[in-house]
Image (cartoon, helix red, strand yellow):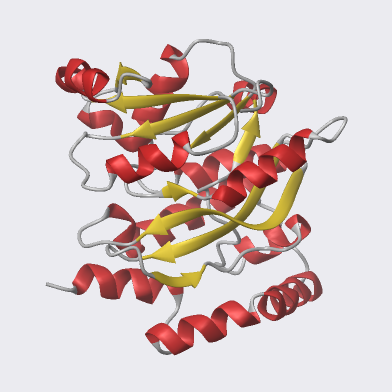
Length: 276
């Protein structure tokens, strides 16, 4: 294990996910110095601390705080001896590529304050559906967001401590997209992003999950983009970014078509949540 660049990993959970053990194991398997914090309902702290003795278990912000309030509570309660931060949901997983990317990132003399990588979309039986489309160049992000394209996934993103402190936590007014608000505030604040073309995490789709409510998701995304990116890029920049994004992700589109038919990522989420 590498005893440097300690990473704070937060997992918000009610403690009832059937995938929680898998999530925990994926974090423990990383070749990194990790402080893993579970943020849970107060009545379950003692039980889950006993279940996971090598993990710090803290009370969340209550039902009204939701997932993002739970993450904020963990950020406040965690010891201050960490240098980087990420969070992973209790049904998702970090992959070996996360540790590989982090170790490579830490080799830089002054590593960028934010990095992200590739995320796999998986089902409830751990079957890979596709690799989620992503922006191979962070410079495409504003133009893509202004076209309703979400250009990266939070799973496996890593934030340097000074960046996290400036952002001041997650905005709990957003039920589903406070992670977008969080990293976009970092982006527009001038924090450089680094992309690693490695599979860093898995995002699981399953019946009844909140992210299946694409109407709320799209509404929150539109509000966040309008707040933080009020200046719309030129039509040339938007078209260029969209073309480059499509070309970069062409193999992923073809894989998704083979496995799910001609469906967008939003339609895949909606289909999953429509199943009985």
